[in-house]
Structures are given as C-alpha cells and as structure tokens.
Image 1: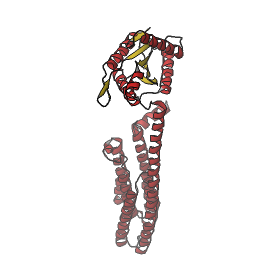
Image 2: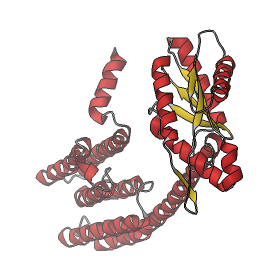
Image 3: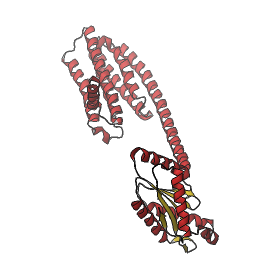
Image 4: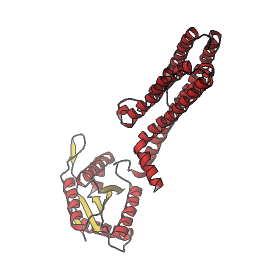
Length: 371
C-alpha cells in the first residue's frame, strides 16, 4: 500500500510520460541542490557574523522561486513549445545569477559559491552544445566579475579588491576549461547520435532484406512463415479461425517468352499492388515463389475469405499493365483457398490450398476454388 501511494505521488510530481519524467527528475534534482545551496549560504552568513536580514531573505525567495517557476513551466507542458523543453540553458543562466548574487551575500565564506558554480555548469555538460556552453561560461564570468567589482567598491573590508581580482582570475581560467570539456562532450554526443542513426538505418535495411521480397516489396517466404506460425498459436490459444490462399498467375511464362523478363517483373509488381489494394489491412500477401503468392487472412471464416479472394481475382482480371513500348498485357490469377482446421498442421493446410489451386488451374484457370 505504501509503495502504491509513493508511486501515485511520483506520478503526480513527475507525470507519466517518459520524456517529461526525465526532464522533471533533472529539474527536481536542481531544486534540491538549490535548496542545499540556500541553506549553505544562510550558514555562511551566520558564521561570518554578518546577518544580512531582508537582503538575504529576498535572495532566498528569488533563488527558490525561480526554480519553482522552472518546474511549473515544465510540469504544465508550457516548455514544450521550445526547442529544449527541459529549459536547460534558462535554468543554468538563472542558477548562475543566483550564485553570483549569493556571492555578494556570503562575505568571508563566499568561496563556497565557486564549487556551486562548477556544479551548475556540470548540469549542462551532457545536454548543451559547445556554443551554448561557451556563452554560459562568459555569462557566468561577467556576472561574477560584475558582483566582485561592485562588492569591492561598496565593502572593501569584506571584499578586498586584491582578493576579488584573484577570484576573478581563477574563474577566468576555470570557466573556459569547463566550457572546453562541455564542447568535447557535445561532439562525442553528436558522434554517438550519428552512429546510432547509422546503426538504426543498417538494421532497418537488414530487416527489410530478411523479411521483404526485393522485386515486389511484399513479405517474403520467411516472413510469411513466421506470420503463419504466430496466427496458428493465436488460433490454438483463443480459437480464432484463419484462412490461407495460394494464388498463381495464369500463363505467366507466356508473358516472359513474348515480352521478356523485364515485362514479367512489371507484371509481378502490378499484381502485388493490386493484391494489397484488394485485401483488408489485416490480411497479408507474400511472394511465395516465382509467380506464386500466398495470402494469410487472420481471424477470418470461409465465406468472408472467399469474398476477399474473389475481389482480388476480379481486380487482377481488370488490370491493363503497360510493359513498355506502348504494349499492354492482361493477366488472370487462379486461387486455392482453405480454412485452417483444428488439429491440422500448417503443412497440411498449405497442402490443401495447393491442391485446390491446381484444381482451379485444371478447371480452366481464372477462378477461386475453396473447400
């Protein structure tokens, strides 16, 4: 029960969408670190014996309120309109200004602001591009340099100019180094992203080669065998009916002999397009071999399957296929259709469909025979 409540609270705070949860986790961590920094600054001010009163509490409200606004902007989805919905650069820039203003409050223990600044910039290492990293480093240097100069003028006893110059020189060396590291990480990220995209394209091509017929773009024999095996398992588990049809183009050899194999390829592609157009979205047609095609009709009983195969046969019969040089050819198709029977193997179902196909051929072709 406690775990369930914690999950509900987590969903309430972070949302349920994966990418949004990642953004809000990062922002939540930044909020926690900001709260720790606020506590550290209050401690530094108290130890330094320089109670700042209203100014310190105004800074506290600014620091915590700004992070709350960033969280609200992301949690509400308002930030999705921007290129970076995480508002990474905005949050870092805000945290830099808060750290610089905190430096003006910290007095003798103001050195604690430097590791905080480094931590702030590290937040952007894995997301920012090189240009943004250098820009934010210069922004940080300008903010701290301005605060150091103002405090050295207003409170030279607590902020000796010589010490502030040393602090500024240290930041001038440290911040560009952090920016350089961020730039390197940015280049590594881009290189890895490019490699992932190339790998994804290569895998997609390999999958297409393994599952698609190169000529027609239909599923190939291997893919269709896997789909039939899946449908058989569904049928065994849930009692679904399914049908299988084998279709063969009539007198296809005549097309090759009269017009050449290139014309035959055009006919095969035209049949594939017609087949896909005539069938339902749930049906699958594959090139089974040569001019022979196999159709899988999932969750389909015989009357409906027969109507679908007749629609395919009539669509093919109406084709006028331009094979080049102004020559048009017409083709017909013979189809053997059978429903899978409980207890039969796929091989037995395919054998029945094949037998019905040859009976359709023997009976004059251009027809669908079913059992």
